[in-house]
Amino acid sequence: MSTLTTDALLASHYPGIIIPRDEDSISFSHIQIIRLVNKFQRSLLNIDIRSDDTIAIVLPPSMEFLVSLLAATSGSVTVAPLDPEYSQADFETVFKEIRPSAVLLAAGSLREHTPAVAAALACRVPIAEVSFDLKSVTVCEFIRLGRRRSTDASVSFSKPNRNDTAILLHHSRASGRELRCARFSHSQSISICQRIEAAHNFGPADRGMLITPVHQAHGLFLGLLGPLLAGSSVIIPKAFSAQTFWTDCMFDYATWYTAEACTQQEIEKLPYPQLLSSVRVVSSDRLAEIMEECLQETEPDDQEDEEAVEKDSLALQCEAGTTLQCIGRRSCMKGSSTRSSGKKVRFATLADEIQSRVITSPGVPDIRSMLQSWFAVQALTHLTQVYSSFQRVQV
Image (tube, rainbow, N blue to C red):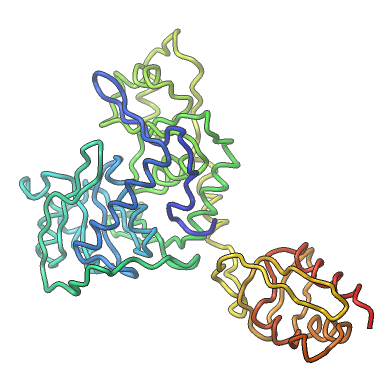
């Protein structure tokens, strides 16, 4: 798992997202979320979004936000979540910087002529209003500002690579309103989520109350994506209210929450209900350290293949009757290497050693050329099996 796609979600029937309502709450399993995402991808294609594009999402924490984000990143589209409270000038600054192919807004934004709408019209960015009717996330309104790129109904999204940019997060400097942008690749985003899961022991039994903005790393990774990718449930209230917070936690069986400092101060002023089970506060203190570690991770060597392909098996038939299964096919260039236990095994050296121990005959293909195409680098165990099996062949 190295890309931020629906493949990163656990295909389970455990609740993934819980939406509180006045009468009751509605939950959506991880499988249902995957279906919503796959369906919404067609909506993105219909409004002329293509792989390698960038889109801006100006939505509060909601099912619309989650489905829009995963549908885009699963199609190799870069997503820029933006603060709905930005001014028109802030939106225009960001739009001129990232040049989005569209901006996704909450239903009713066009009617209210929000600052995001005004900025999109000024920068000629296509506008799409997104709504959720408990059955599907759809584009309810769309304003196209420009010519349609393609009318081909068969067009589809491509799968992202691990080093493609998945998320752009903007934040302002502490001393002013100058906006800065942080880029997160797919592998970095997944690594952050995995470390959050390990640091806070998230699991299927956990239910988190999402009360932090999702245009910031705190809410996006720690409040939403981290626990969701760990198989946990995330409760998304319509809005935060300090007066009803503990009641909401009790009603939806929340086991944890994370909050900004000012929000936490409001919560601490309220009495803790006696009937409420223990609810832990997940601090964001380690988030900055986790993000810094992930952003500093070394990118893979250019000579190594970055895209894992479907597993396959190749039987190398030897004259002595030995059959070797090389499982875990990956394309491999001449001279590349695999790392295991801190050691490097050169492909050329290993191929020569194997070739020298194998009976060559007209019925046996050249081992070196076959390994150049089918060399197994998935794991040390597979490589050891290859080498050991050929050692047993007697010349």
